Amino acid sequence: KLKLQNQQIVVGMHKPNMPSPVFLESLETSAISSPEIIKIRKKSNEVTPTDLPNLVDFAFIDGDHSFKSVQNDVQLLEPLMAKNSVLAFHDVLYFQGVSQIIGDVLKRGKWRLEGQVNNLVWLRKHKFEK
Image (tube, rainbow, N blue to C red; front, side, top):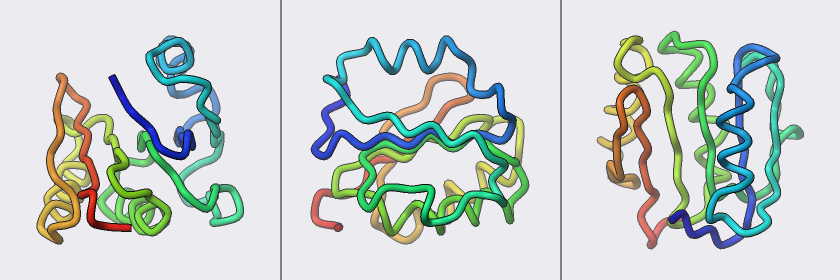
């Protein structure tokens, strides 16, 4: 079960019809109690800080899979992530840019690998970080 402090979830996507309705339905009916789910239906390079809340508990990155684009997504989201929050990446097995950014994020020491299921990896921010 995913325990969230601030109930702020950001779901980002590259295409207007992604992620799948099944993902969103699963998220909305999961063990998460009444979260505020912010669905950003923009390309990664179109997302601005004004599209995002001040504090985020969970972010799902599934946008443009190039190194630079994923790096920009992380740079935009990371300062907003609450302590003990989750940052999830899709397509980690198929795109080098995604897996490379995950390695870079882990090297900084503020995040730990929390889990992986097939092509999805999620990291958890250490409790002592903002």
